[in-house]
Image (cartoon, rainbow, N blue to C red; front, side, top):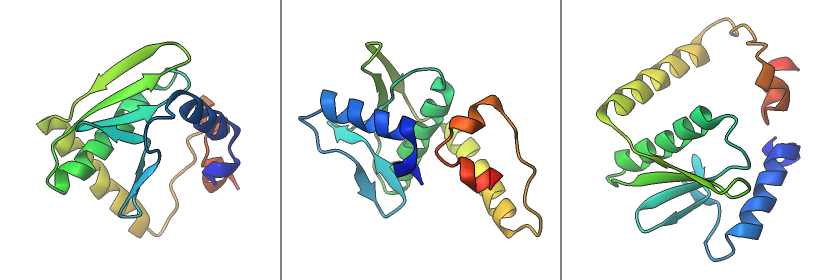
Amino acid sequence: MESENADVNIGKTIENDNYKFADHNILIDNTVCIDYIKKDVVYEIKKSDKQEQTAINQVKYYLYFLYKKGLKMSGKINYPEIKKTTEVFLTENDISEIENNLADIKKIISADRVPDVLNAGFCKRCAYYELCYI
């Protein structure tokens, strides 16, 4: 679904134009796809910082995933279009929160009823819009 989303495609273009030196889109266990890794730092490339907390949470999940595999890393979110970088670190609180979120996800998956749609403003541009609305 992501490959059909215009924002995702713009992000891939920005990534390919600005980070030619790095191996891109590192798929791990068919579960996470990291933009690139360099010297124990996980990098995520975004076109804008409008949804910065969402991007931070995404990188924290990648760090958690790698932590569970025995790797301790940090993260950076690069916004090349606005020349901004945000550092991301995984804390003990983050680990607890992620594990609680994963438990909630398992409950949702096994529930008899589909959750209500959020109808949030950002939903219409989401790469997974069709999962919720169609």
